[in-house]
Image (cartoon, rainbow, N blue to C red):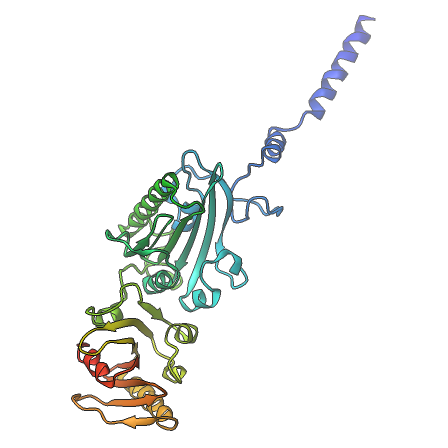
Length: 364
């Protein structure tokens, strides 16, 4: 009888061991109940079963986009997360149109939503192929007005948001609540963490795992405002009106002058508004298009002015040594000028004299 009882006990214990779930299964069950999950490249709660990357304790080893997806903030939980290669069909994640991002050569994108009670902070991040592309994205997607104290290469902010670009990265951090000092403090903390991490990369301590020059698609370009903006006069320029054009989408959106598509293709173009005061009040829009060679610039200039001359009346213009043409288009005047590898177009003038006043301020 004792032997039978001993055998029964052994069988019962074996059954208990067999049905006990593994530690991994218990963890998955706990996550399912609590709603928590590792954040990888799949949005939280998406229902997808794609494997997520393991938690990395040393965040200094991560690239900027991966660093953002692993970034923690005391008292805030991750409500939603996506990080991955840029895709045109991910428009719902963007604060800027995908076609513009494609022209600015976006490579990676990320969107994170942090939550604390009813408060939410939305973080949009983009990794571009060049620093110029990041600055163009900043000009097109930023929120608020230019910061008094610049963060990164360029920044703007208001009570609910901070936007900045540094190197080949652009970030926009926004709170869903108005006049929320706690959320704004959290945004400032996150901004500092992101800038510090980018500076770590810039100093050569981390290069995203690839040495500079080893891969043409690798991010190795760092810098501030694109050089083409240094050609634009600063006096009378409307602050915050600057835009960078790197393709036909940006041209149509930021410089809608007649037949402006005929100026394409060029390497880069800078656009800004100018407000002229006395003696003649006027509001002008300036485009400086940079071409790879002087011959390409001359060809674009000839093509553009010939197209305009076929539809509009040409006016006389004096005081310039470089090729310059002036047109009356509807109720406004337009000036086109050729300077070496650059073509200058000034549009929207009500007084033709103001075109010359602005053009004479451009030195290069």
